Amino acid sequence: MHAAPSTGRYTRLLGSLEEAKPLDAAVKAAEPLASRLMAQPNVRSLVRGDTTGIPLHTILTDAPFGAWWSAVFLDFFDDQASRRSAQRLVALGVITAVPTALSGWATWSGKDRGLKRVGIVHAAANAAATLVYLASWRARSRGNHRLGVRLARAGAVLLLVSGFLGGHLSSGRHASRHGVIHG
Image (cartoon, rainbow, N blue to C red; front, side, top):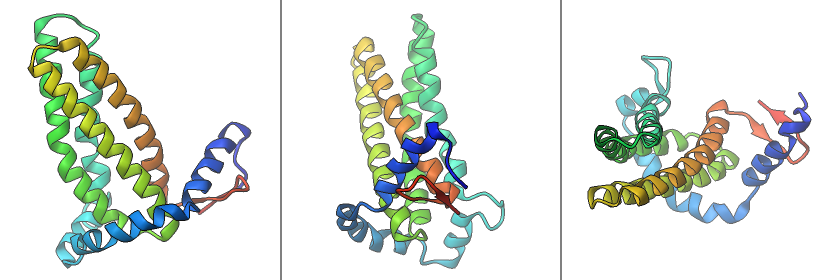
């Protein structure tokens, strides 16, 4: 199947990430921990979604992603209740990012080398977003709401990048440099 012209550039980008050998050092460093997460059969079954039919990571991503996007939405309102709620949602997103990341690393351990390379960039974007949202929460909790809002919007851009990469990872398909998606 050939990619549509408008998606060709994204397919090439994904193909480049899949083939980016400089990411192998990070893959090699992360593999032992990720493999240990999947070492127990009951954990492996839960993470893969054997019972639900949906991988755990796919379910857990809704918590930080939903909390953070809801906070960004509430930031359009300038009343005290919206500010307080947005601050709490930012904190909820930061807290739920931890189990979401762990389930992601466990899922990542079963991918092949090309998708692991994409996964490293996906994880880096998620880590950066989490740190930016943590800084947003800190700014808000110290009374600097405007900075907190700006940081949350920057975090949202990182979430878009991460979500794009995560969607590719969850599809299980490979992109090639020739604009063809392989599944």
